[in-house]
Image 1 (spheres, rainbow, N blue to C red):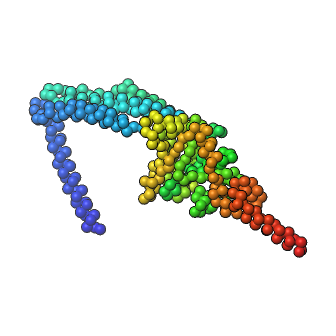
Image 2: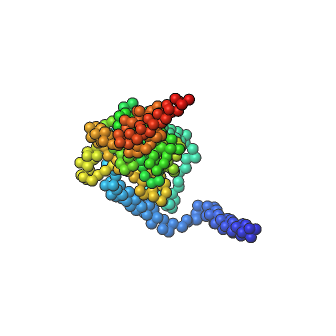
Image 3: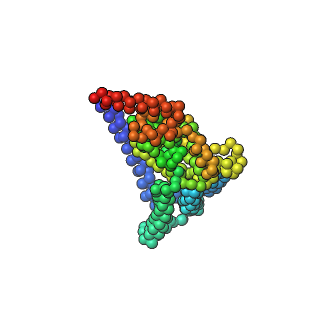
Length: 369
């Protein structure tokens, strides 16, 4: 260890000596008298190269933008999405204009004011008016950008309208699971992570009667067009992130900390297929957090239906209880009668008989007393 420290110290001493020797050379050149001629070989070439780089860079940036345009996302398919895009392009415009001006002047001045014999530079040690201008104007511009962005974000993350379609989306390694508020109402039942098992993947709590008509779908999500959609976002294991690029929706799914995002889609899947000319177009929900080796498969098909089609699709879905009637045993006794509505008759009969038998047994026991 001491040897390593000594070697590092030696290296630093050598580097210090090199730096000092270089500084001495610089100081000697500064202390030259005005009568001494400064070496200017290659000066014109270097100045000309600044103009070449300026023109080449401008051409390259323009070509890159025009070439990449075909890969840009189409116009957003949600109301807030277009507002977000407008803010993005507004910010890009505000920042691009000074970027072009400043870089043009940097390269142009390097050529225009290159060293020439007999030329003397003018220095301004201080200029309070200029300092006020370049401080106040950027401060106003930045405040404008921050305020408009904050306002848009506040509106997006505010409480969803009362008529919003409520859908829960849960991320797990390595797929999404959508849970709907039911075939009869738009109220999601409670959940409890302790109830998660092979069938009950999101921990639906059947002690809450609002969960009786809930249904899940791990393969695709349907949402209605022209109506607010509230996504209640959860993660079952590690950090995930809900990303719907065409809707400009993005929100992290954090274990133990539910998040949310509401938006209004205004283009159906059919509309987008017509707009893009692609009959196979589909919206997609992706994950933008690397969540493990299977991250690449973390996606779900999203279908935006018109209102009538969406209601028809919802009415055709099988509730969780009808899919797994054995979970009727987890429903509290005082709520079993309500839960029976969502359980197939052939599956509900044994449970009812079992309840009747238990009641009969209890009665017989009472009479024996």
